[in-house]
Image (tube, rainbow, N blue to C red; front, side, top):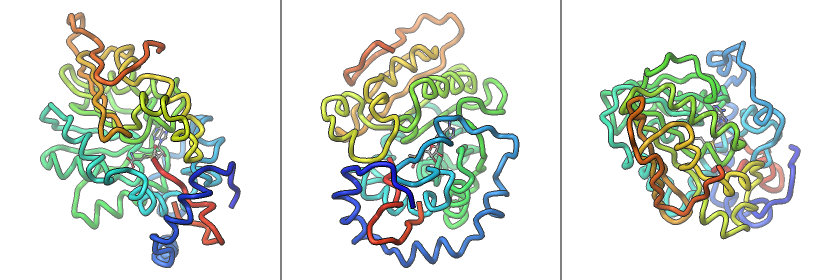
Length: 299
Ligand SMILES: C[S@@+](CC[C@H](N)C(=O)[O-])C[C@H]1O[C@@H](n2cnc3c(N)ncnc32)[C@H](O)[C@@H]1O
């Protein structure tokens, strides 16, 4: 499998994680699914993939998330790359929810780990997970079925969904923005604003931009084409620019941050950006070869 560059992950972490992963079990899982028909059940035939998404490798996987190998290996690796613990990190997003949501949209839901936690936390709510990768949605659906959780999985682009205006109380995204160019992240926040009812909340969990800026090697760990521009930017400034009020970012276990905002009444006089973390105004199956090349390094 083609690998784009020799990252710290490839050189140091991959051999360690490889020791911890049950590759035979991953292979069995991969072989247990007839991927194309399974993906076809989600695939929206008219969906046009953004250029940033379809033209690059992510995490050393050729084709990025448009490759079933990415979907199979995502969870086994993610558990090792979200300190201090994956569930604790994702819980930071859940804990930031201030609304009582009846309808929740999780953008860039991937294999649905945060989406499942949202459904567990807000059992009465209708929960929808949306992602550009039909393969990630295949895995997400299997996980939800195993957990007995009723979640809708939708193939779509978070920058431009087909939902009507003001149709959600809560829009979330976890670990999405460090993988999208700044223009796409800003477009996703504008779309989130459109989708939320007045008083609705947006919550974004991702890497801590301030600390990523100060610790450059962290941006070199994985093959992440947009992580440097993500680190240079400011989710809370982008959120404010999208129209959100009461915007604030909380540092979460140093490496991560949780940013939230509320859709105000039109013309409401809110302090648009309240910043807790320093910010700037500018704006998975492995290839089973001899090393972990081909294993994505999610998050
Ligand atoms: C690092 S994964 C995060 C997945 C999941 N949210 C999590 O917390 O584990 C990023 C996901 O975003 C998806 N993605 C990237 N750009 C997207 C877009 N414009 N619209 C929808 N999904 C997108 C990818 O397919 C991938 O599944």
